[in-house]
Image (cartoon, rainbow, N blue to C red; front, side, top):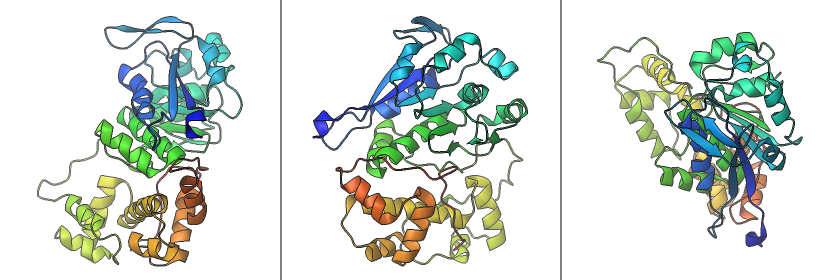
Length: 345
């Protein structure tokens, strides 16, 4: 019975100098995730290196009820950003107190960092050989300090299965929504996003908003073309058609699109089609050929190829996982960021 299921426990580690906004992201996003019957899907708790007040980077402190032993009970541990990481940030090493706290975490626990919280995971050796990201302003320093980490400074977040990292501030929202989507499907994540009044999905591979030379004022953005595509995902789409929506040459449009989204038009379209396919697989009983046509992949073979590449499982397995438990389930994550790559159309 659904009412008898134990909610997935998320423990947020509050460190001195934390950013209140980022501390609140897991509580806001995971706390809004509900089953079709209205049951909370996550239990979110906060701990510190010791119970009591924790200083923030604002003009107030927060009071934390739990000490680090709570980490031993977590299914997922989230480490938000802090501006006072001391030797973690300066030398790439944990303090004795922090090392002792992290030692409570059980093997197999999912680990998540937001912004410079990734320094903590890296200093513990938990990111060695793995893809990771952090705020773009810290990425170069992060890579120098932790050369064994495969740092990608341009993405919003990375997903390496049991270890996930995000860039700064709002990218933490994107990562937590991605986790909800991965755990319980697009319908649950989209409802959380709607209640939080944020975009339901930005791929991990989308570029961070790093300062770059300003485009010429007379050049239009590619917003209209993207809106045009979303109404026609089931149709054949050509770059010439997209470029025409913005009165650009294909070459100019492709360059502008990548500057704005961080991916090529073809990759972006495939990502939107995978998202459409996920919704159809979760919410309908349509045969695979029809799902393929309605999502723009044309054939079940093409659908299978792209869903497998993006989600790490076949469309049939995806549907069985989520439909079998009333729209909630847990899927393995594909390696790397959650951007769905594919050929240009």
